[in-house]
Image 1 (cartoon, rainbow, N blue to C red):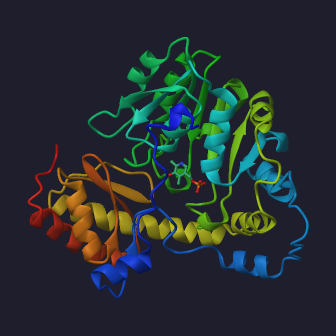
Image 2 (image 1 turned 135 degrees about the vertical axis):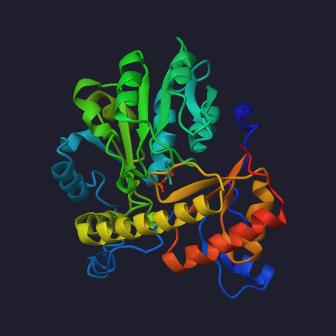
Length: 362
Ligand SMILES: *Cc1c(COP(=O)(O)O)cnc(C)c1O
């Protein structure tokens, strides 16, 4: 009765709710540092825009997302027709996989990287080549190039990469894109681009005029603090956007999500303040880790990957002490929280590393 490709997959497990965890461990407070949400919330303009909206609950929303599309088009200097909107990037990843992949096809992606690329390749019956990140947590782009063959339809680049926070420089990504065959789609997931400070970081949009096999993904979930509204977008050549448009459900962004995203987008001030605070807390965090000789990957995002041989135990210890973080194979990913929370967290983390007598894993 069931689809064979799904055998090896499991439904996304969000774990117990924050309220449930607080009860289990008898905690008054629980700080969420596990999903890279904006710890400063969203622009106050978003709330006003929603309250003042005409609502019109009986009508389907604008299928074209017109107002947001035009505003983004102006700000990014890209034609309005080059955008495709989704219920978060999660849905865009579904749609790209739907439109491009079938049994016998393959994708190439880094490992670790954003899990959904793999999940939806699997659902479509395609195979996945997971190319391990290098010792600095970076995409091994040369090995990724080697992994491309005649079956490869899509290559996923997550820049900066989730969960490592590392990035490919402009020089590296230039070479990568030049060498990918033009009949392979290169998707560059820039969910965290707003947090980037490195001067040699490539803006994926710059590749579009000369590479019609490149697709750029961005979201309102992270720097804009609008994760609950589920809205993200792809930017690409007309032929790619039209093709993906064939598999898009027509009314996939609720009216209020469109209103919220537009209000958030226009509040440059709020975003800048969040980014500035993120930089300050990140600097405090890395100097703490350096002082204690705790190994981590250099990050360009609003999270940091801290290496440990006992990630699960470390995450559990932190949870028991009021901080939710995420465990991976050889480290934990921690969202950069507010200054005071982060100071408390780092002391908890230091204890966690000692208690679990976890040897640094590098
Ligand atoms: C958070 C995240 C997404 C998904 O974001 P949406 O909330 O679905 O827009 C996609 N890619 C990466 C790398 C992410 O970290």
